[in-house]
Image (cartoon, rainbow, N blue to C red; front, side):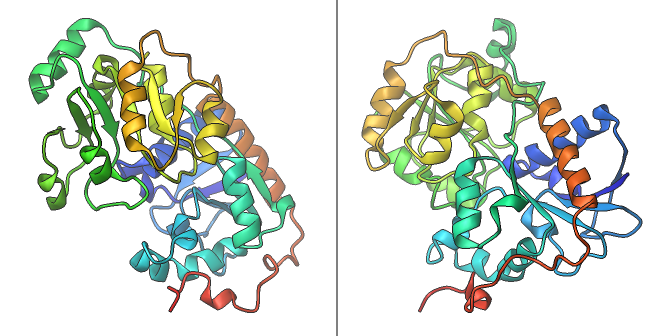
Length: 327
């Protein structure tokens, strides 16, 4: 079986990029069939086409299409994601036409069923995992990143993209929350990030540097009020670093007692939790990218044998307004 894989998101520093890179590498190691990177949203010369992000979804795919849907935040919070909602309108319609939809948690599966009306039997939950390079690092590597990025000896850590503000990440609110320890923010920077006061900004870092920064942190703080999965918490745990996060369904599902959860509306409590944590941190979930690749290949085989007459999920009468901002 030949799989066309849209590898464009692999260059992205965010979680979607981590997913695309790690899954592609694991699929190649699995070696159950041919994987062809398309570099464009194209389904030519393949038996099954996989869009590992919503922007690769095709309205009219000539072969069975699999789409990975990481979350539905722009649909659930249209007023906060105006541009994304308009841009993704046709993409969400394309997702409805996918033969199979992969989601990272049951929480996202429920959203896909309730918001997009995708039949449950066409949805498969396949969890994400820790990249092999992200593991606890020795003290000399931790010292090296401290010197390179002028990090304090003891610090709280946040990891994510800082090029544009993301309402659900609540970085500005996190910075304003009460704390006694320094706060380090790691991720590619935009102009708005320079307005954040009293924090250390590293910008983009390599995976080896990120692993050392995780290892040297007192704790990871994760203030998101909505997530599809949440990679930074399991990455921190893999590096031996405890995690304080907000209590949202996907994180509760993925982390299952491994982190300190706080009420979504109380970031001060999140900081108190983070500062009170100590090592050793619990181990991350045992699920690996090899496991994810095997489960994903099973989905490809299901997609290839899907009925040829299938034309997509049942539409609501107002389906054309799925991603249109409310008046």
